[in-house]
Structure formats: C-alpha cells, structure tokens
Image (cartoon, rainbow, N blue to C red; front, side, top):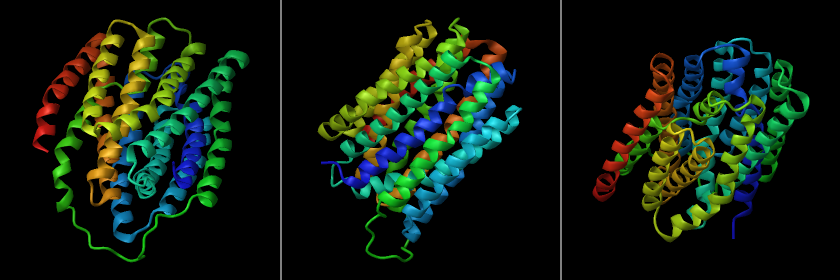
Length: 375
C-alpha cells in the first residue's frame, strides 16, 4: 500500500511536470527555429539551466539534513518553478531563455533532494515501489503536457504566438501543484527540530557508484537533442511533441514495474540493465530509428533514476544530502555534456556527436560491474 503522502506528492509532480512538458517539448524548437539560434546555443541553454541548479541541490540537501527542514523547501521549490515558467512567454533571446530556465531549475534544486527524502521517510521499506509510483505520476504529467502542446500546434498553428501562449498557460497546473503540496502533504516525521551533527564520512562509500552514473549522464544525449535530431530527420514541427508523448508514455507504463523489479532483485542490477538500454537508444539515433530511440531513452531514464533513488534510500545515512549530491552531479555533468554535444554537433556534425556519445557510454558500461563488485 502506497502511503497517502507519497500519493499526494505523485499528484504534485503530475501537475508540475504537465506544465514542464508543455514547455520543454517545444522549447528546443522555439530556440532553434523561432528565435533562430543555433544548436550550439541550445546546448548552452541546456547547460546553463542544469548547471545553475548544481550548487543549490547540494546546498538544500545539506540544510535539510542539518536543520531537519523538509516540507518548506519542497513547497518553496514548487512555487518558484510555477511562477518562472510562464515568464518564458516574454523571452526574445537565448540568453533570456537560459536565465529563466536557470531560475526555474533553482526551484527544482530546492525541492528535489528534500522531496526524495520525504518519499523515503514514508516508503515503509518499499523504496522501489514508492519511487516507482512517484515517477509514474511524474511522467504521466509530462505525457499529458506533451499532448497539450501537440494539440495546440496541430489545431491552432505553429506560429510564434502559439508557442508563447503555451508558455503562459503553464501557470495553471503549476499553481495547482503548489496548493496540493502546501495543504495535502505532511512534513517528514522528525522527532526533533534542531541542528543535527553533520558527518559525511559514512556516505563516502557511495561515491564510486554515483560517479559512474554521472559519467553516463555526461555522454548520453538529453531529450532536447533527441528532439532536434527528429526535426533534422525531416519530421514536421507539429508532430515533434508526439515523440515526447511516446517518451513519457513509455516511462509511465514502465515506472512502477521497474520499481517492483528493484525491490525484487537489486538497484544495481536494474542500473546495469538501464545502461545497456541507454547505449541502444543512442545506436538507434545513429541509424535514424527515431521512434525506437525515444522508446529506449524513456526506458533508460525511468529505470536508471528509480534504481539510483532506491539505492540511495537503502544505503545512505544522510539521505537528503546524498540526494542533493546525486541531483547536483547529474546537473553538473549533464550540463557539461550538453555543452560538448552542442559544440561537436555544430562544428563536426550530428553523426560525430552521436558516435562520441556511444563510445563514452560503452566505456562507462564496461567498467560498471567492477565498481559494483568493489562496493
């Protein structure tokens, strides 16, 4: 039985990610083809947006563990995201897009580690199922947001005005999420509300596995580059959001299943499986198999992230801090990876960028079993 607080958090993520997907499923197209910026500028936007969140994710994870503050950070983080997304409707340059995306990601940074700490507190020993359910609701919201974006472009047209109106309408589901988390989610059941002694030595053993995951996030393409590859392969802009629908549908129907498998087998076994799927996603992209590549990317994202979240829940002592380090590391390494990908794509072509990704992923996958055995 899933705890009612986790169910409520699932709906919070559902509405938040509905808003996010209304934006992210068309934002790469908006930057490259509406604002007429290059793919390298898209890489900069992705990098800046994720890198800004790096320090804040770690910071709020540490503060949460030291001060026993959880729900206030979660509520504030969702509020910041809700009010900054609609402001993208006013953007006229990649720099303004990057700034607003960075602010929105700061809100996500504030809530990410603390939210996972909250889920862990109410998981009752079933961290795989709990995180699987939460991720299922998360990506279901993303799927609905992508459907809304597709419907708007298909029925109302693909003009610049429609793009901007979609950005503005993200305010509604964002504020619904804030209301739910503020009034229907209980704070973590800490017995004391005072500063706790902070010591990370007990969690140093987790670093090798975390850095393996960071390396994988560096090399694998973000969904933004999958979107641009779909457009470059000749698919009309109107239909691009449907690929995000597919991407999120795959995650929705498989998230809880992978959560069960994590509890049944182990997080590390599911993580290795996810790495294999990630390599196959990039191979499919190399051969222009766009639909299979989005399916495989969805499986990789949902299985790997659920495995890491459950693993941290099971192994970490300072949970919020380690979650903060996990998300901060993903942000930092994926930001650097997006920058490198954008530059290689611009100067050497998309094929070279994809081949660079595949080589890096294969090397990372090859050394993963040895790291797991040392743990």
